[in-house]
Length: 492
Image 1 (cartoon, rainbow, N blue to C red):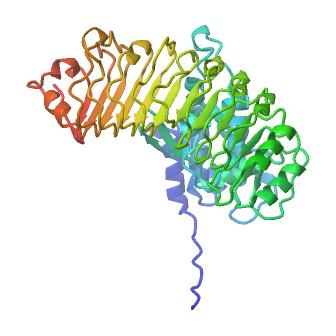
Image 2 (image 1 turned 90 degrees about the vertical axis):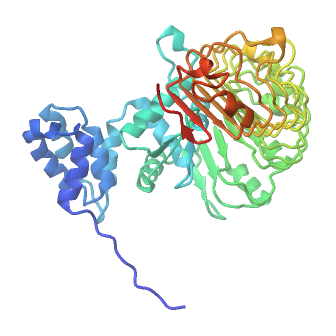
């Protein structure tokens, strides 16, 4: 093969880079009122080497700051005096990082465990942060336990400051990314506590606390690395590895890392957890997803009283939850695939905020028995082919805000029959119903808070929700955003 000469990308012209900076530093047209700040900004942009990310980040840093001393602090900061390579913009980004509140500094640095270019999900990241104690509880009494809202505020603040980008809103969750240069910054400031294992013979620092395996090591090599680690708080596998991680790896983690808070066993290869899992008293995040062999959990897992997140997604052989599962009083985030006919065992999870149910082929009843899911905010049910109705389960979800149901071919009612009608979903803000060919009607209840309704591939329901003429139109006529098969219903 021939070779092609590399093309060196040049930075933006100064005038364009200044335009980016001013766009992020001021509201439209506002810069005309502050010519003195624009002049200082011109000097700042010269230090950005034509890199738009640097201009955007520093512009975001100075947004809504109209005191000249704030701008002079950025222009004249000693960080610019550090030795730099040509084109190096880390000083510009580091300067923005230094201005973050302390709680955001820790959260941003932790993100170095993700691979470059990884799409991040707000729900996952919030509970990873929470597992490490990085989310400070609100001083407001009514928000003391609402980790999700506080964590989402952290993410959006980092987005507004350009530490995250490529925001995509899916209404019941959102995604975003880190620019590669921001990832470089996170990696720099998080050393040596965070380490990414990305080669066969890694050098592991004695003070490392958070380990991410981004290289396809075989189990023998992984065990060798684990043997070198101490006082670990995070073990994370961002990719599905081709090599298996079986019982030797699991037992090594349990025996060595008594203070671990996040343990990623996704894609592992074992039938069940050992009873000794209960020794991990500090464990807050446990991923068991994509394990094709796992069939059950030992009852000892119910002694993990600090566990906040449990992932059992795509565990097609998983038979049932342990009887005392309701003892997980701190569990807030559950993703599950199971062969159970009903989700017995979860009804007493009074802290549960997010429930995701995937590919539960035998599931006939969503919940059964005494229920207390009074804190549930978001529920997603997908590919549960035996599920026919949600009632009376919906009566137990008074704070539900997001309800998403798709690919449940037998589901014919959200209410049940007669006296099983749902008394109210007064907090529901988002409802998505997709590919439910037998669903006959919307729930018989008050949907007063519903702001967005999406219905696709639900032929019977589509007819009932036609504007003005549909039998269910009176239930949704107040909803501001209604989409039927991808077409927005005209507003009144």
